[in-house]
Length: 398
Image (cartoon, rainbow, N blue to C red; front, side, top):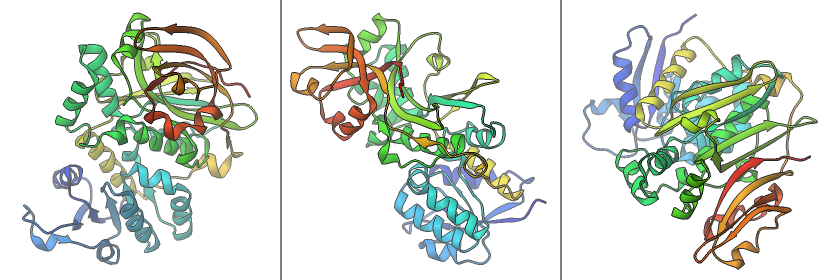
């Protein structure tokens, strides 16, 4: 039974304003925004009576039965979302950092208070990957989820490999178009992809993983040497997140740049688009593709969640509740390309074996197997070194 939705909106930026406009043009959806929580008073197109300046005021408003959270501050977002759930209100959120860092608590609150928290917009923009993992791939046949999860970094890499632009120029263009922030580290250093991967892992294998325990590294250290190397070998470089089922109910996940060949689905995913490959025992590989950055793609996912709330939809967390729990492990080996300049940086990497190496006047590189645990031990220092890492092929041994 569809219910009338009285929405309290938290945040009135690009996505929030877009959502407000869309709702005015959607008569089939029985929903209206009755109050908007913002940080500061200023002149806006809507009446002053529509706005409040405290999340607590919005959460305690008995006229509101759905809170839609669209702010960037993860701590503030969690405070508001948790309070809304405790007050018996359903919630829609797009804050992937807040959700990934607090997922166990958020799942518990939904169960305890009998409410629904939906967050399709937090992962992969317009691609309905969470709902599909919940509903269509709700069995034990799933083997892996791999993909380009960040539209901003993918836009930058597309300009580099498709239009021969440099990293700095491509980053500036992404910022001018609104795909990257003034401080782009959240996107280009892999944090955004990491949080999305943690969320997808919960709906793929039922395992809630602490983001701080996952190996992730981005593209901010990429050099012209790395780009030239990839081109000469027939690769593109993509920032890829992956979670994979292993033997004995274990899973592995990481976010790393990857040297991608033409025969891979994600090779042709360009610009701000995301691409997700879902692999299973009976259906082999299935590919989902769509825009992963920008106000409208995110807004469309938010609107979809609002519609689902109107029909009393909840995530059942089927893999967590109805299947044997998978254990996230940090062991195993991957083959990487390591470009470096200084021997003191190289000393941090204990390769198990080397398959290719080069020494040059400016840069050097090695390709070889290395332990994931070794990389995890130094993951917080990788961006400080004059290096670049990319996965060449994956060889996980357990």
